[in-house]
Image 1: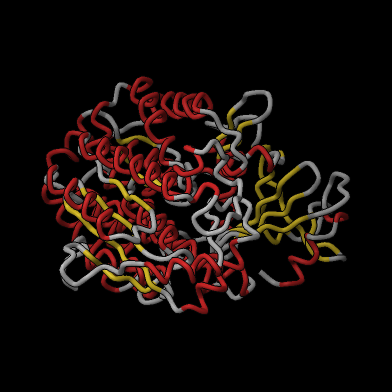
Image 2: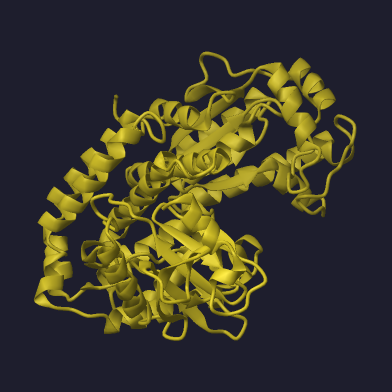
Length: 525
């Protein structure tokens, strides 16, 4: 799209209704011009193979398809298709000049009511999630089905989708995911499909291959203040991505909960969805499709790196998002075979213990219990309330520390009794404390890993200085505390089984791959 075209459509005078301003939002396939009350979506003239908007006729067709299909879930939002015409001042939506493109016209939805914004602000309830599940469940029950649509649930089509996805992803190996991670995912997908051919056939026979939405995620759901739910921006450009198992449709949203660290919302959603649809077998293939959705999102974010019109800062953010999606895809697979385990962090304040614990928990879907949080619970403090006490004073006396480790032990025991893995995040400066937890794992027949975090001291100092300004950080660590801890810290000895020494100054993707390797979760690469 020419720069002149974009500049023209950023002028309020280009629009048929009055607007005080026009804002441009870009995706890898569209320009979205936001006026005061409406959104005009112009498709980029791109051809990615799976999506082809390269000609004006194609763009017109898919604009009309977008309106038709999205009216299934948002009948009042999609207003129609508008002609973009050539005018003396450039492109515009009025006059009788030559038609140079087309745009989908929508009512502008309130950005602050999008599910991703509401979730970030802590304004989404379990009742909201159940309501969304009912809307999607009812949509799936009514969604079109035919012999042609059923064919898209066959193994050949599913495998072709995966192969296309892998083919388009390989160019980003070494940039947004490692070649080893890509091979790990590829091998698992092939193995899963071979071992579960009967289940895929049962999904077709059960009528679960439907004309779905194809793009249900947090940013495409609006919870308006009147209680209405609008799920918009479905896949219109490729029936192969829309004709799918209903499990693949909901897997996108469930994966989005996971990537945003709100996995707690998956169970209420799934519970309500199964109640609405009667689809008890959806869980048989849910992980498979969650891996697929994470890989697709990783690929789509990676593709933004190839767009010359996207600013460098936005590309850098897209790269980080892409890496996170690919990590999650790998994690879904790894956690399926991950045995019940007790994982401890160990190290001085500021060495990256808690950061490593959070990132490992993200990859493997693990529960964390943190000494920083438990200590404040026991002393009646809010997690974010800071106590700048002197070393071993205030809430850091030996007696409070002993109570804290006792509570950590109880919670670890509860998890292992239930067959769940857990990460216990604490300094564990004494070997005697580490041995107690190691013996707990032995009694339960669970694996034990001790993650000893180390880091160059200058990096530690910088982290601790930055941390003092983070209002949501529960740790009270400071540089003077680090130096005092260092004097009495009992570093893990060579004979302490399960110890893994990790350098937290490394990039997180490298750190996590090294860690998963050492824990025996990844096959030899």
